[in-house]
Image 1: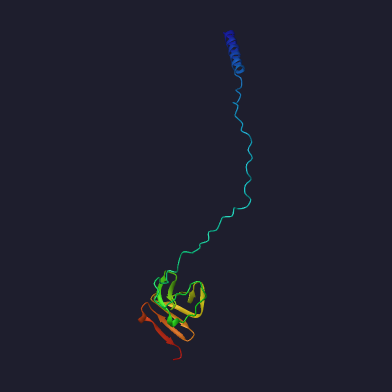
Image 2: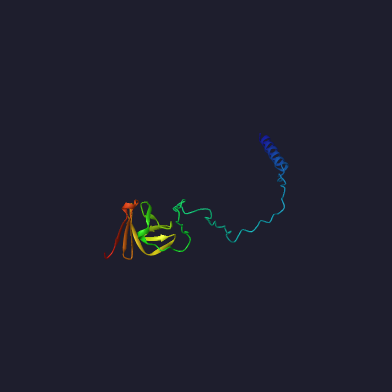
Amino acid sequence: MWQLSNKLIIVSLSLVLVIVCGCAKQKPKEVAVLPVQVLPEPLKEKPVTPQYIYQNIHSRDPFIPLIVESGQEIQAQKGSIPDVDITELSLIGVVWDKKDSIALARGPGGYTLILRYGMLFYGDSPISGVRGKILNNKFISLSQLDKVVTLGFKASDTKVMIKGY
């Protein structure tokens, strides 16, 4: 019995040896190699993005009337600042939100003025010597030198006071 087990061990070991030696290492499959490509270097500076400049060539001031009465000329909005007499202004509208109010007024030449921050503006230029405020989102009160004018939407709401008289 001992001899049988020795023979069995020898046969088993020789079988394992044949299997191990008979199995060769598998070589990896050949992979197609592409030629080396040179990658572009990353940009060092940010690319300049073009700025869009709005040109209002074909637009007009929406508060200038399209139909003008005869003998009345409309003054160009981009021209010089007009001489403003607050007694000749009329209130066009008041726009407000939770934070602020803005009033729009029109002069006798058809030019548009804006009342905001307590000052009267022609375009982006403030009119010197004129101060004002918006009352109840229905009226505006303007003061210039010795004159105080309250303007409303109706002509009958307009009141002019001259100080000292």
